Length: 478
Image (cartoon, rainbow, N blue to C red; front, side):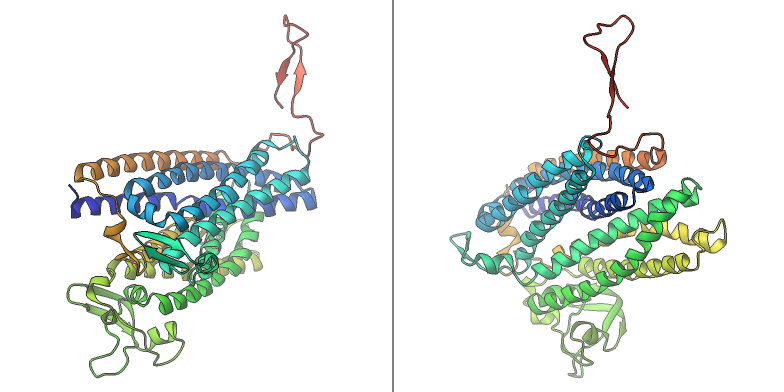
């Protein structure tokens, strides 16, 4: 029998599946771009260090890509199992968009990733670089369609809900819904920022361990300079997305800001931005808060006394919960600004050449901070996604379909079995992913393997073995 408990278990189940999957695609997207740039540098300079760096980080890319595929297929299953009514209702748009993602991104990527992984030494250097470029492009196309599907759930345009089915009336309006372009830009840059800080963290770890210092000083310096440009850009794009949320999803923005009341008790506009607070949804107010006057108006309207609608402008039945969006948003924001500071600190270390000196307390502290910073973008992406999804509640498709209308009808036992099954599967994938990535990092780049420059290079040889049939010599790998 369907119950509130079964619905809650199904929602927790999908939140778990989506959160675990979301660990992998952003790193795939960002690292594909950095692999292309490193290989391009190898082609331009013929410096073998770039080749070995490309091959090293490509191993991390492959492990992460495999985990993304495994958990991505699981998430597609979860849509049908946990949100069957939604999948059926939204099929004419949502299903088509996921189909476009499969064709233009997944299948496209699958073709070129084989050349990228197995084509070293078998195809020309330019053809290999072209393959890496297409892996980068297809991973970006994947983000394009996935963010499009999710953005449509945030600001559904170009459709009509008739007889329980979303009928597409305007494909252009549906694809380019108001939330899409700013959220896609914010997500793509987040993926690049994540990859940059993973490269920074891994490279800093080698410098701390005094292994391959000359080799990893190079990606560390380049990635820090790039991060000093990308991290502030990400803060700007976040503000731009916030303006769109304020215009089209005022209740979601009010939840993110813990903004219950549009006006203060004296009738003036409530302009305060809460740094921290204790939200109480039942009472419809914060029990206490540390507030900066006028800051909310400046952030959201860019004016001193601009009015920001509070949750009191939304009927109680349609208000999202506040705790997760409020603190999820603040964790993401704090990490974003912290990464800006780390990137600027790193550029200063590069500029003053302290990063490349043999010792020094400042260098050690920076390298430790850089290693720690490699994990923070994962947390920022997680908390940002939780903010986005929970702030849309109680709507599955904003203003058109509620959660309870789209979730599958299951018993508590059925929902619990699926929850346990997905938890076990995702934890197994997570464990082996990080085990093998840690193993690759501990082993370091392979400095003994020959540099495979192009299709004319030998990739092995045939050699007669004592006592063997000369007509069938054994193959010796390089």
